[in-house]
Image (tube, rainbow, N blue to C red; front, side, top):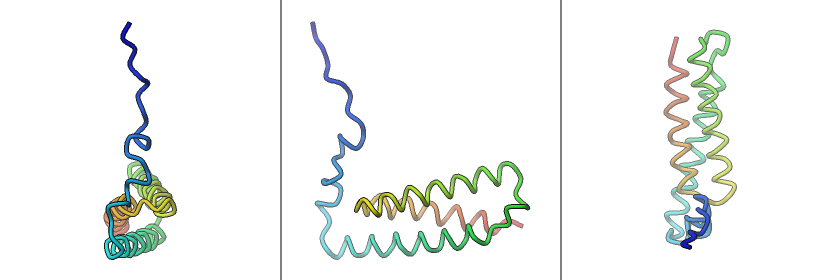
Length: 102
């Protein structure tokens, strides 16, 4: 009988160590700086949001942004700088959009 091995999770397929192996010091530094900058801006924007003025959809978007911030921080703390920078960028864009709403 043909038995396939169990499917591996994304982290196993990708291999966390392999994520940053291809990055040189300059790339790592740039990504770390981008992630820190975007996280800071996202957190400031979230802090400026008037939660009492958000409708249900706005609160849902706010929770999404907060989740992205958490994901970006976890990726940063795990030294996955490419993911951290990408997710932090999304969080910043969504947070700024949310903060700009009247």
